[in-house]
Length: 169
Image 1 (cartoon, rainbow, N blue to C red):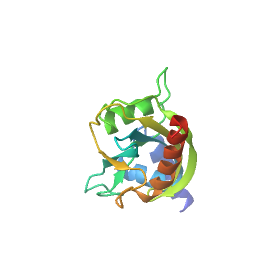
Image 2: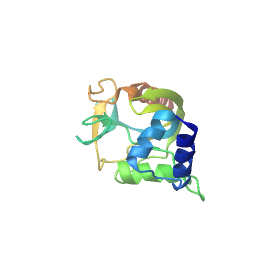
Image 3: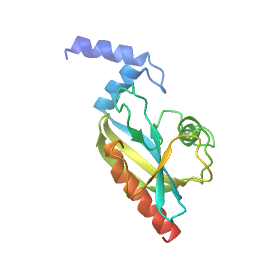
Image 4: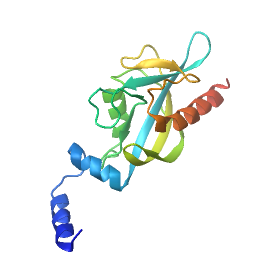
């Protein structure tokens, strides 16, 4: 990239407001940086005493993971920690889980990993689903579907282990 192109790009980027970015710009930022993300792994114990994971469907026209299933999560945005409430958690519950009743999040750990979108630094939490979900489907934790976004398997396994240890299962 020439210095003039670099300066032009910098001038254009200065015009963007922090927060939600237009998708084509977000896609390139994700390619060039390590994104900070939060992932909730919603769990429950079924009637057979097996741990199940609630997974959500991605649309067929999703630009990165069409027709895949995934755990609910979000990219951390500037301003997500404004005030007394953690806005990213609320966004996951409202936008991804459609206000499904869940327990308080339990921190599992963090994981730097590669996904199809790019490098991500994930903060992983498990939550217990309290009642029937308003979005998604349950799968037994030891029988995750082939359509799961592959980069999520490792942190799902970490969350299930933490949940099992917490519940002394």
